[in-house]
Image 1 (spheres, rainbow, N blue to C red):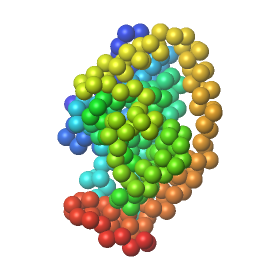
Image 2: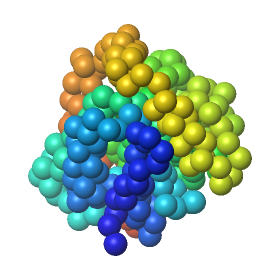
Image 3: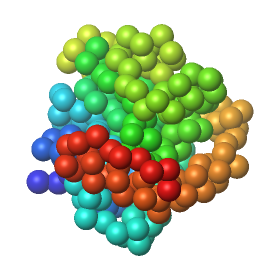
Image 4: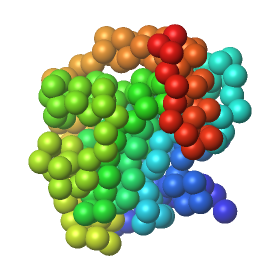
Length: 257
């Protein structure tokens, strides 16, 4: 069974469903590669006018990086994986057509960044969001520092990123993280309805409007700064301690090195 399912809806809508329910759609190296290939294919498809990213699991949209995989990584392994993960988030941000995240359950770390890489976030009342990387000795590295600040402002983004705290769907709406909130079980239908509305408009105008909106928040320098920050944390003793503590289900003993 594939970890990535694509389905066409109506005229011009493609749904990409994450299907690793046993690990809450955690992003492993292979999963990142498969998703990147999917989004690159969609970017080149002239028949696709809107994309919806959803989950087959009611418990999670995506729980972030596959920390079980990373628990066995050396620093060199983690650095080798970095371009693969960066390419995934870039492949979503660079889609020429609008992308909509349909979030139910957990959207944490890289899972939250996957949603932030989309143009719109639709969530149901079960959704929980968080950029939790600092709790395991890392820095958000999928664009989260830039994309969250764009959505909710620098102060509110710093509150979430520096504490690593999670927010429920109600607070996410209040902060401006979520664009549309639905009742449980309705998130896919609502996201597809929005996508079909977008697909019914002029594809040329929609793509041009998306480029214009993104240009208002050009964050290329910010992404480079985020990448440098990620690398500094990735090879630290704190990062190794954070992953070990997660795997051993204990509190980390930070040294600041």
